Image (cartoon, rainbow over all chains, first blue to last red; front, side):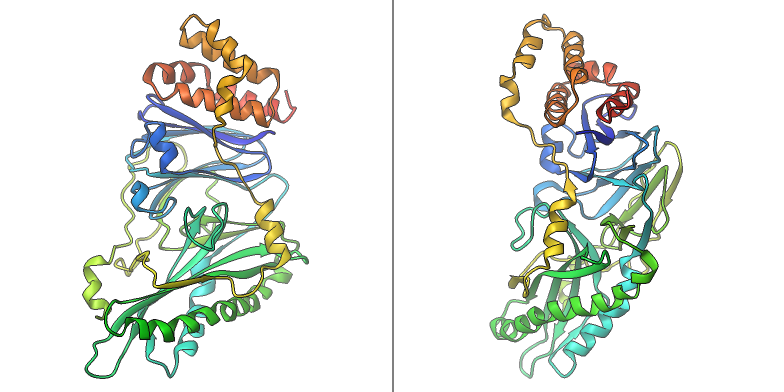
Length: 287
Length: 153
């Protein structure tokens, strides 16, 4: 085994104090370090400087997420990304609350990458899809969806804890006849991207979920809503694949697809980025 | 109830100030115009898995896209090299770290890398151990370890 890049997380602001050695191995893409690892190292909510040593093989990204431990999923929310170009050593200090950390290798040697904003390519697709799906029924969309990710989900049924997913969360309103008040509801999809046998990017719908406000009509509403959400998963995947086909001729042979948080459609190389995973996901297509 | 009644649960999409010092440009995504966009509540009434079997390529890709987990193998404490390093270091952190790094330099492979990382991280749980690790785990040594692991040194 060899290393693509390695880094250290420190409790002190000058690369001092308690520390944790982390790294991405050759051929690996990700190294997740959840809150429990940071807790054991004395670094939960206690990381104040980071260094990254990179090789010629890849750029190194250390992403610090402000998550609250067991009450919140790792790798979501506000993030501070520290990025280092190839073949170098860099370090930063900062004022940031860190609950989980994700390392991602990017810009691998000998490859090209195209970066796409999940929001830019998907938002109008979604509103068209959903408004058509809900037309004529009692449920309607409330605002735009949250287009985000779910990375290495622990204890989420139907999802692989080593998996990486794009996540769509949409608030709904269900209007009911008098004397019932409107019911709040929501729907969630998890989809994944992968290179198919022709080395084109394609999508697969992995999981669906819905929530309905509690009340006398909750079960009735869920009985109507759940099948629609369930059937929508495949329909959505087909629609997304139709859009992705439009990129086939532009990208050539796709070898990998991975995700970075927020909007970063141009390579940072060496530098930092602060953002929020609820804002967007950057889909990176390696070809 | 409509979503208006859940307004107090809406969580703004925040991007705190990071006050970063270090190389490169420090960028910040533009705070979303709708800063009170709701974060997913994490509540569910019903859910289900994929409604069609996964494409074979998706399954293969999931296996291929490797994730490195820093899982500590508890058997590392039974390794001869570790027990030898402990018994011959005379309770000196610096000497112990030297022996761990020497073990790693003899052969870098998945096992030795994982074991050395686990031991060094275990030491770094205390201020004294962390100081000893940081003294020797310089970026030059790390860069050398990366090169050795690729057969380039």
